[in-house]
Image (cartoon, rainbow, N blue to C red; front, side, top):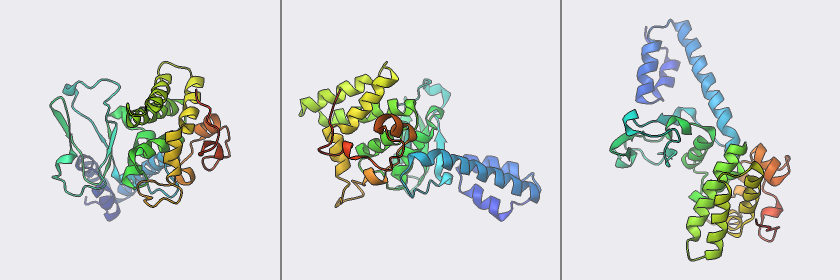
Length: 270
């Protein structure tokens, strides 16, 4: 049976692999079954959006038809922790022949699709990773380090906080380089604190990181920024995760970053 128009429109938004599988399944269904099938697919989309939304700035779209999961073949020998590359946004690529869509590892490759948001390997198909890439896709990211700041602010649990603190500290450490040895040491110490440490130690590291001079400066750049695309006002627009509010801000009613985390605020570092 031919696909009903609404289901065909839905399926056409997916990846080539998904189109093939869904079309074959739907062709065997009656019209009523196709409508039920479409409703179940849309319910899955809604659940995906609900999972990603707490990590995203206010007003985000989170189009689920753009989400993809890409994985290298088993022969590539990727371990259970996945790769350093966790996700990719190709929102600015229109040409399916663009060479930047090709991702390689040990002689194996995966092909990304234009104008999509992809998690690389199943372990990274998480709301946290998808949200980071959706910010790139929707142009609410700013510089990469500002997107990492948004990751940390949006932390919803202790695993998020540990991972986001570690990645932001590592990026701040690399930016400081050897030119600013004091900052380099600070961010190295904060990075190391996220490894084999207690939940309380990670919380203190996150507090110190968000109050550190370089991170405060990046957040302050978003206030009346000349280039808001590079320096979005994450203090007001960035998502605040419930866990981050409870353990880092110690204010579950917070709607934006408080004054303690501004230039001139408390700067107690560990």
